Length: 143
Image (cartoon, rainbow, N blue to C red; front, side, top):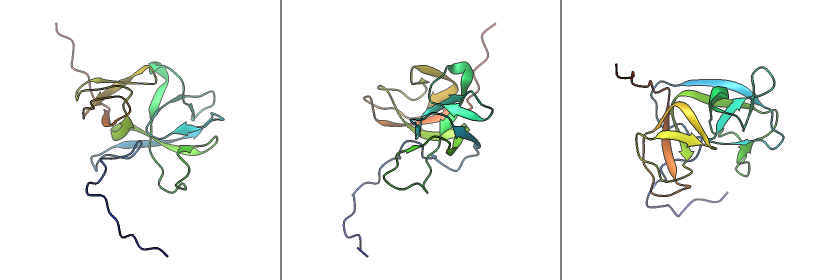
């Protein structure tokens, strides 16, 4: 067995689908319907079947963001069809931002504005990792 003898000076912030912290969160389980599977840290939408999810949909069909499964082999970078996937519906999760974002911005992933979500951290360019907080209650409209 090899012994690790080289270490990075800095620990990476997170990876897509990783749970950010220990604050209370809500995780649910659903079944992947897509033949191509679904990646980590991406939105999942109501599928054709009860408790089924797919990678495409709209804000009304948003179910949650996929949570990374550490028990999958390292070469697997997504859930495959018929896998049972954990989805975060409330809490904080790491995602890959599609563009530069600022803390407090609305979350747009896959061209869909995710309801009740905001970025908690900023990025300076596309494809950088950012924290998304789900379950944010919108401020009431002014009278």
